[in-house]
Image (cartoon, rainbow, N blue to C red):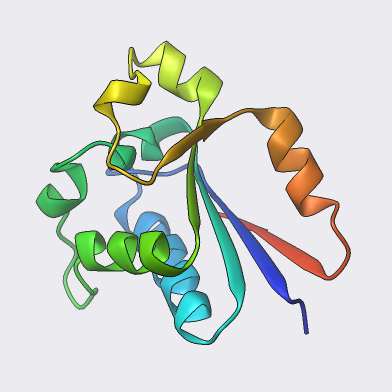
Length: 120
């Protein structure tokens, strides 16, 4: 079993089930003691900002803000720098604990031994 899970989320409110699945898998992995790195890219970028996850609703899904907070408490939550720039999101717009990083950091994470990457 991988000791680290890297989850890359490209979907947001445009694909709510994929979005919720990625947050759920990341939060469950954190709760299971696995090292987790959740990357927000593309349409998911908005969830790095305060109040955005709180507006997300999907029947029979845990609240996205709770899942996000679980990841922040026990893992790493990263917003893609290019995705942020395209949307005018700056570091001062982010929830405390969210980091900005680019493709080089993502590649370095997924290439680590004993790492499993999932893309939603």
